[in-house]
Structures are given as structure tokens and as C-alpha cells.
Image (tube, rainbow, N blue to C red; front, side):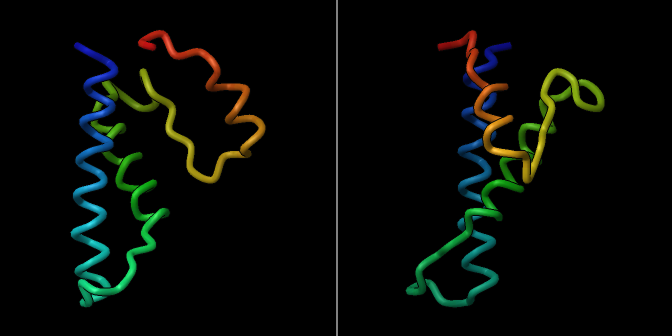
Length: 79
């Protein structure tokens, strides 16, 4: 299992899904797409698929405090 590749793949999938959904929701391909929350939710759902069971190995938190998030995510073993 390549953690970095798996997560990047799920994020890429989330971007594609979000683009398609935003277009489907708006019905106008010329309209600017502002789908940040849609991307966030789809990325979270994609990463959830990598978990073996609830919250393991990835804890997924939406609407998490930015200061707490910043201090919790300072170590990336794959970088």
C-alpha cells in the first residue's frame, strides 16, 4: 500500500466527481464553479474508503478548528 498515492488518487477522484456534480447542480457549464465544500465532502468520503474500520487509519474531521488542525498535521511521513 502506497499511502501517498492512495490519498492523492482519492483526492483526484473527488475533484472529478465534484466538478461533475457542481455542473449537474448548476446546469450551466459557463458559470463559475464554487464547490469548495462539495470537494471537501467528496475528498473525505474518498479517504474514508481507505479506512479498514471506523476512523482507522484516517480520522476525518469536517469543520475542524484551523489552529488545532494545523498543529495536528505537522508530520507527514511520506514527504
